[in-house]
Length: 200
Length: 200
Picture (cartoon, each protein chain N blue to C red):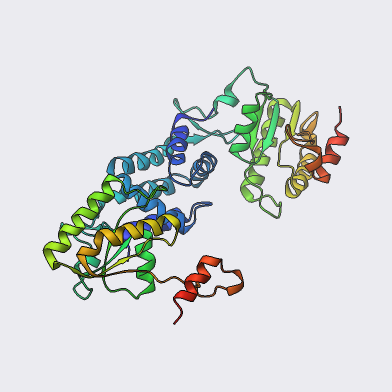
């Protein structure tokens, strides 16, 4: 029914996370209506991502201009080199940066799967991380396990605290409590119990 | 915070229908993780849409190999040339084609806005459509107004029936009734009243 190229577009787009075949189909027709210039602009915006590299320490994608291996966060001398927050995703790093309260570095571990078992890539990241810390600081001043406060995140955090304790003076986790703007009446029991424990 | 190229990607993608900035951000990092080859594949799939043209009669996007002006549906001699279904969207056409019950042609009018007032492009499409019908058949055998059975669709259908009645022997609309697999208990009043009226 549909031209081969449209079908291919739908196939490829449907395979992206949280885009289904229906949305991909609508997107195809939407782009066709926009016309050539905007189709090419979109295509170029994607192609441009090829020029992005990944920081060798924290794995944040960045634009390497002079073949630097490290991103601007890792290279920033004003930030504490031996205070490291371990996050799951790039977007978690972006959120923490926006809070403007953290002046250390990061390690982007990659999304945890439902079982909470680290995959090969994640294990390798941790291994390199430990090697780097040991070699450069012997012990980090602080490692903050900044995983999501979910069942899997909590489980993995416990494992990481154990595994990384020889490599840091102090290992911490993000505080638990009521979200700002939240109401006690609607808070679930776990949140409330965290808020009581962490009262100040 | 984020590299310029990633920000641009997010900007452009967020502007697409039903993709928000959060989804666009996640998509960017997802693609970066996939790596160069898949980024280029996606970019090429979009770029390829440039080769798609729009049928001069029905406005269905199609791949024109020898500079044909009409799509394979409009060019198909086995289909009735003077039975035309007016639909809003390309996806409506695809759905009707899949039902495999219609052997006429189409006119893709374009999505109706909330006011139900036709925009300039839609008015032009109708004008050309009427001109074409008059010139070629004097009167079409049948025009099926296949707009969505919504308030706006119903309003617009009434207007179209009026406007197009001089150009067709018969103007019809899609049948109203219970959807196959639906349950009477859960049908809303309008659906049920349509089903009673259209009983057979």
